[in-house]
Image (tube, rainbow, N blue to C red; front, top):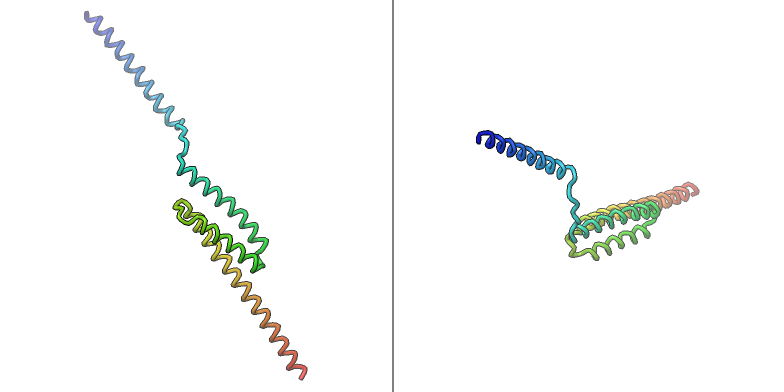
Length: 138
């Protein structure tokens, strides 16, 4: 009877050890291989808006480089930013895009103001030069 009890204790101990090894392996495996979760509709929408922002940023950089010295074309770019802001009004997930557009509009308006100041300075320089040559010829 004593041997039977020792035998059963040994078997139960062995089974407990095997169980512990199995649990430890499952925990290790789960930590290394995280389950794949399909993003929900909100997350997919946010990812789509972020992708749209990245694509729009690339296109805008090219357009700004091309039209950097043209106030009329820069004004058109500002209007496009405003149209996108208006189209995204009420979409709470689009705050990143709206903020980007507002910053771009401010940057483009500053460039338009710089170009206008340069044009005014050039006109004033021409007027000053014409006045100086007229005074010199008298």
